[in-house]
Length: 137
Image 1 (cartoon, rainbow, N blue to C red):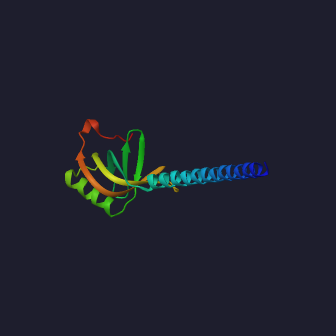
Image 2 (tube, rainbow, N blue to C red):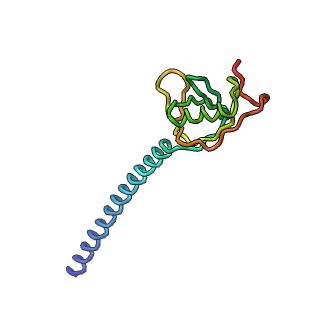
Image 3 (cartoon, rainbow, N blue to C red):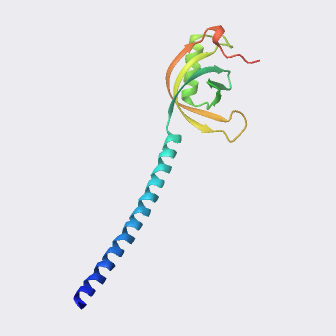
């Protein structure tokens, strides 16, 4: 009888130890999942995206309008190449262009547009017809 009682206590101790180990593993898995999700979100915002829209420029600034969002363009080497391609298509200072670029979207901490595009790659540049162009009024 004493042996049966000892085995019963041993089994209870083993089962309770396994349950607390499972709870610790579940908690660790949940923390790992949250960390992974946070990392994925960070990568998604830092990753370049393909963006198409209307492009208009001046000598000092450029803007891409996409649906209901306007982006200021960071004037890096790729942006200057895009300006040169647009000027090669049309020398009209009021011309607008349909462009597709790969760019990183960044928050603007200064004055101007809320979002900025850091162009990484130029995919397409086409002149828009006058009736379809962006109008500044």
